[in-house]
Amino acid sequence: MTITIAQNSAHPLTVNRLGYGTMRLTGPEIWGEPDNRPEALEVLKTAVAEGVNFLDTADYYGEDVTNRLITEALHPYPNGLVICTKVGATRKPDKSWVVFNSPENLRTSIDNNLRTLKQDQIQLVHFRIMPHSEVPFDESLGAMFEMQREGKIQHVGLSNVSREELEAGLKMGPIATVENMYGYGQRTTLKTPHGENRGGEEVLDLCEQHGIPLIPYFSLVNSLPKATAKIAELAQKHNASEAQINIAWLLHKSPWILPIPGTSSVAHLRENLKAADIRLSQEDMEYLG
Image 1 (spheres, rainbow, N blue to C red):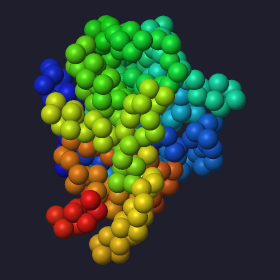
Image 2: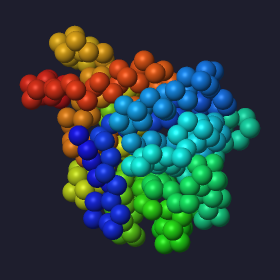
Image 3: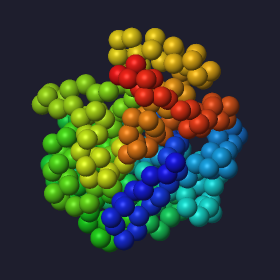
């Protein structure tokens, strides 16, 4: 199974439809070096060896930890590998997450990603929308498109985006991908003070209409009532783990979904990748709802 990013552009990117999110490779609280650095490097090498050619990272993971691990494990990068990063936030020494989304901030983040990933151009960058931002959305996204024109970024995506913001972004320029929280047990995110939802359910149909891959994060969270019980029942039926059924549900939900389940374990990585072999019937999908 493959999916094409920016299919109508001059430089589309076709990747296998099960990627890998690197966030779990850091230390506790997504900060610092991993407890087991050799295994973290082996996870990345194994993922690529098993056919994963889409990696999701950010320079504020660690900070800069996942980028440096990717470079150490995989550089020079194999042909066809797509590395996607995110900008719009940064971390303080107290491990807090803060907004970092002025045009100057975004340029600093892009330059840092280019340096740590040892790239001349980043293939895909998500502008992550953070709460309590004082910078207008169109000003930040405009800076992203400007860096795309300069050649620093190949494709621009949005993360943690509401439906209204995605609609506004599409009017400003080509949006290649959307990365929102989404999974069988996590359909929407909490509403913002302005009443906006920023989950996958709110934007999936719009992504499908425009041929935009939806990349779900935190896809293995089960917060819906009875979600765990139904997943457990299907896992037993298919002789699979609950995580595998969660991933399989995403793959069956829409051909425009590109899951990126993360883990710091080689064993769990291999288990997650096997979810692509699970075939859920129409009856299974109707049962899950």
